[in-house]
Image (cartoon, rainbow, N blue to C red):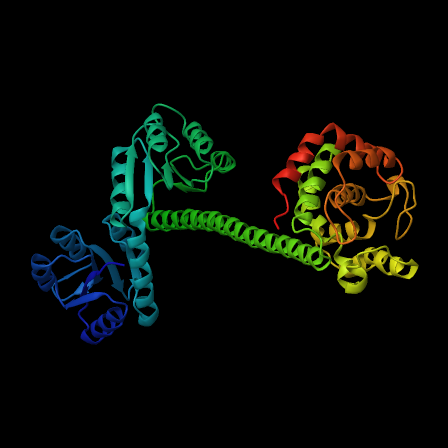
Length: 474
């Protein structure tokens, strides 16, 4: 808040010192005077934002004092008194004082002064529209509101008021119901249609129950009868502005919170993607390590991954599922990490015991992966377990048949065999394409899902293109 100059006009020096000392602690710049004469001198040499005024000074009091002070300065006046006088209070509010405070509990009163000043300073951000056909009443309302730092817009007609409301950012409407050009309730309806949240204070000479009921049902926030009691008028105005201000702050907070939540979700999604990417990289790396340990070709897992994705898409799986199959398929032989090197890299045929140990890699791979709740690793567990099953039920480890074999297993089986047959291994030389194609035709419906074999041949050029783009480098 900006530096605010306060003139304290209190004839009791001890009380004046207390007020000045406490307000300085609140960072106000305070000057003390003790008479109307001294007020006149001070305001002639310095501008003051606020005057805290005891109504009873040695050289002037009550109405005369206020009238003289208002002639001397436009400073905002806070009256400080120990006497309650309702008639005088209302008169003083008409003259533009911003509050009438009792000084019996001075500690509380000073806190209220600080609170009031902060509120008045905040009012500079608020716009009030007065729609009133009486020039006298409209001028009085506008004057007391401007004394409280509100930005005031005025109209003497309903249509003019609606025009201003549509053009300006209005925070409160003060509306007379008896207008010359249209009924005030119609104006209220138009305002609420434009912005239902803006509060409307009805000020009307017609205060019967029907009028009040219609006003409130049509969206009015409060109702006042004429003639206006200005202290009540200002109290209701401040309350409605404060309510609307806090409602906007709450809405802004909500919107900012939504933005922050979206940003947090975006960040979490980014972290989740980073985790998924890391997971994919780990899966691929482990797959490559397994293949390297078994002396198989370096790009085998890459090619099997791309073949698997292509088969999955043509089979009718979604892009998301096909991508996951591509990322999971490098783990198809993860179980081989538990197979002894002597068997894994044996150049000749296995005996029965060696074959049994070698074939156990499917079960072992499944055991390694089955406990994960991650989609990628769950898919990898299925692939490891079922990629050696055969369509005719003569595969291993469980002898599953036909569509009892998961589609991931069926796809990876074909992709793995296609690449393995076309690659040099420690126990065999690479087959020719013709030999591989003949085998696939023979094994359609036996080893392989016949639909997948058909897909393979129908899109053979794409599979060969993948193979050529990922040739092994020695």
